[in-house]
Image (cartoon, rainbow, N blue to C red; front, side, top):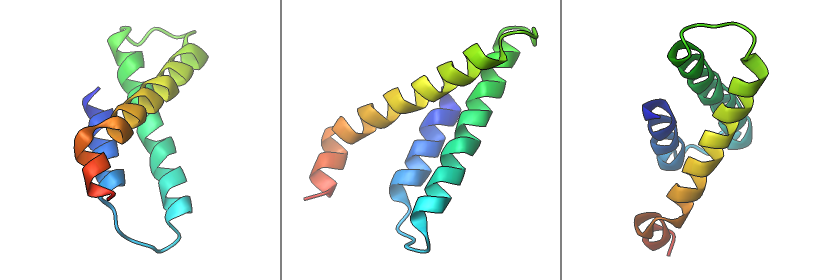
Length: 79
């Protein structure tokens, strides 16, 4: 899940206030797409599991975001 961690590090460090919600949504979809491709390739590029892999990619991103939000370093930085 290196792609997930790289995306979350980028997203959490971004201080740009130029319509961050749209950028964040685009970046999240892009990260989910990259994880989706990783899952497809890990499965040996077998067709027929696209929805399953897409939902798994979304779940992995959400789990990593939760871990990041709950990490002591992030909690300290927000104070």
